[in-house]
Image (cartoon, rainbow, N blue to C red):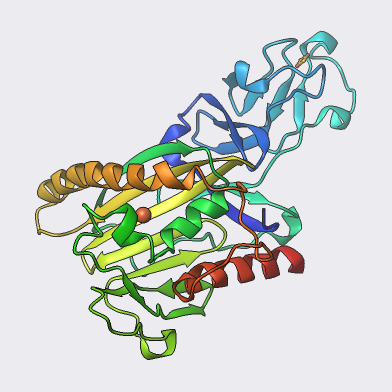
Length: 322
Ligand code: FES
Ligand SMILES: [Fe+2]
């Protein structure tokens, strides 16, 4: 995990008002909750008293209440009430506080800050210059038995497209890989496929390739976008569960027509297209060993793996820097 980053971990609609949701993310057992006035909280899913899962409790006003002895905690993790001590108690409750994780949401995504809270940044990773409220979208999710680094690399992999997706998005037998060109600018890794049919020509080196109008963008630590066209985009956030599991949330965005209901219907269909492609990827990616990738691995990368190499290099740098 790269420390000191906002990780996209859940769709907003999963955390319902007045409910607590237990989820494992970032190798942590977390309890997400939304108070009745809509405020979002995220604390460790373990009571400071005698270890019960807070997620098995309930939301009470602005607090969650442990199911065991009823200790109440607010969204900052502070203990606010201990029934056994009674309402008249004046005890300092700070020793009962539970760890909370800074949590924010935007664009229908819940983000958790992983690292030093004092370093939390204002901006959340997204592609605001690509997607705005004029798009209709749909979402699917799937759990992969893979480390999130492998899932991300798969989405930056232009070589696998004609092989894994030979009968879908990789139709046409374009197995020869030019470049690809890859750049890292303003926190975004940008690349695009330049694949061709192999008729005996030599592949072009990355420097002779261009970023085409259909491109891939990745923003650390875990969000990716495929600009298929101005009006059609696919976004994925890769929610790390633990060292061997990741939940992919895959969204299909479009504004193809001027009628929102037609775009919504297209988005609904796009969901199924994404599902087919995602399953083709998953079948192979979950077999990769080791589960996590690394910059200093013994893997024998090809020229066409340029985006993957850059992803690994930067990830390695960010991990060391923090
Ligand atoms: S274990 Fe939570 S109140 Fe006792
Ligand atoms: Fe793929």
